[in-house]
Picture (cartoon, rainbow, N blue to C red):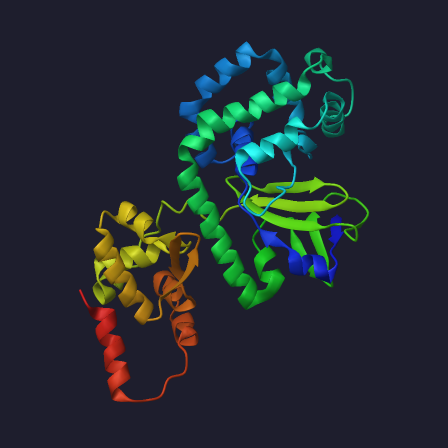
Length: 345
């Protein structure tokens, strides 16, 4: 297995980052080889335009075919974002600065053996830049506000988990092959390889993306990172609230609580449920007072998601409901107030 040995100070400086380029690469992967039903559904209405572009650009078509190997993705597609809040233009410049021979070296590392004829011509970097810019401009940028909302919601949830469970909790569901082994050791995949010390690394980032599994990011030897599947990809499909919960807290509140398995903003909840912003805000205040949701600011938005008590109510786990209730002083008045808050229509 491949293990990164991460110094304590590097781990302390690590951060979660939203990367437009990483999500563009995720979109390109979905176009090239979709694996999940949601990827097929996203790809279907966009495939014809993508195929027309490839038909006009034989070098780009060969480049895509050579960039995704059975184990690795070409390094020019897996660069670490240089800043905490990169723009797509900034990240594209980093690709444009790689000369043709470096792009070819990246491709040979992905698919050992002779390169296809079109990939041995001059101007390969220009073709790589054109490919990424086309995918961003035509497919990702039009839906970037919604994509970014999901990615930032995932980061909020991860940072909350970090404070409660440490790095082991953060890495628990990033990828089946990723595990925190303790003592500064992070297993990044199951492939055989010697441990990689990150003693010279200056940057370590974790980047959510609309992908199935994720991949390693690096600009060796100083910048490392990991792209992973964002938990909010399917947030628009809410699980049904359990029978009886709507009678306990009201159908609108039950619908909102069921959707908050992943962090969402008030405006997204209004769009998803058909309720007004004011009504959503009123219901969220009640759910907050009852201890079933929590909130945190992310940029210009405030995101809400289930507490353990809220999760227990939605999943109908009575033992979790009892365990997640904080010890309270036995008095009649606070208890009555809590019951009133939970049962308002």
